[in-house]
Amino acid sequence: MLAAAETAPPVESLDVVARILRDRLGAVAVSFLITDFTGSSVVRLGAAGSVETAEPARRIPLAGSVYDDVIRTQRPGVEKEGQGAHTRVVAPVTNRGDAIGLLELSLPAVPDAEVMREIGETAHALAYIVIANRPFTDLYQWGRRTLPLSLAAEIQHRLLPPSLTCEAAQFAVAGALEPADHVGGDTFDYVLDHDTVQLSITDAMGHDVQAALLATLAVGALRRARRAGADLVEQARQADQALWEHQRGYVTGQLLRIGLRDGSTEFVNAGHPWPLRLREGQVQQITPEVDLPFGVKPHHTYRVQTLDLHPGDRLVMFSDGMLERNAKALDLPDLIVSTRALHPREAARALIGAVVDAGQGHLKDDATVICLDWHGTGTSQRAADTGADLTTASASSPDGPRP
Image 1 (cartoon, rainbow, N blue to C red):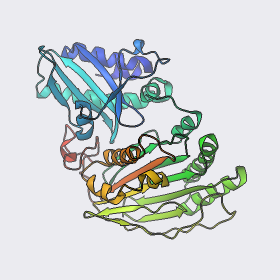
Image 2: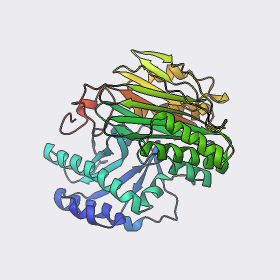
Image 3: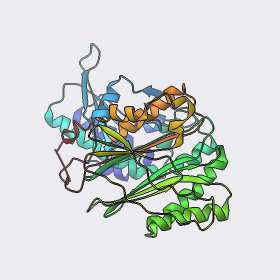
Image 4: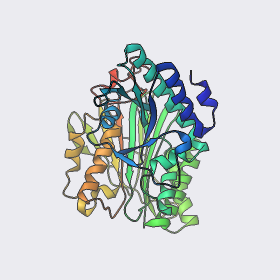
């Protein structure tokens, strides 16, 4: 049904989807709302031809809205529109847990189960269309930028993975980053391979463009080594060497590799804050052997350690911006416990939001979180298409659990 949208120019794809829904379902209005960088608001993208990228995107706050409920639960919302006869349907546009946005329709009648199924399938297909078209247009980048980015922030955002959330049978992972008033050089990354998932979190010294350039060297070296099949020791060595050879400065970091077949873990700590693990309602700080940050001493040897992860554990890695002065009043372990029922995507945003609130909207250092839920190697029937609250995850997919 959406083949025309897949082959249309990127900016016209949304119009094609809207036209198909109008023809098939009699939709009076169709729009796509994209989530912004912060995850706290959405931006409506109307007819593609009406989007003026020179204008700032208009934020629609999520808090307390039907949009927030749909993103959080990954279940469509249906409600009557005022006193009129039309019905509004809001469906999640999500792929592998990455909540890209929302599909909103105004229908002439209350939809039945078959119409809802078709809307759900269209919304899921739209996620693939957006992902496929993102490299070819700035439209979606414009929609995610509700505030202007500094040069340092632009560099920083380009270092992050294309999707901030990933859902799989064995795990779910999500990251969130809130830049400081003067960007501090935080980054996070992950990659899902055939039989491993690898995560990293880094924090470059300094602020603004200098920190962003240090972060670029570190992330580039880690990715280069990782993509060449290097183990964690070699990845750390190459990041250390790149910083030492090309730019004076240091970057703290943590590298994590988990085997998806046997659950084995490897872990490197390069002068970074220790992670926290939630197990059976209790939070424990992991206390690894700590090596030097990348770029401090040439030819430093990094040690690989094991990390104890059981099915049902939640691992939280973070930068020191989560521990800055204004955030010290926050009980981070208590926040992790209180958000344990949320999907990692929502939990990471909640943790970042608490730190931002503590700083009254102004951070002296970047705040970054990676939240990993480890489900184990024997959960191949777990739903992994959308991702929702843990209590509703199995019901979030319209077709039930999938591998």
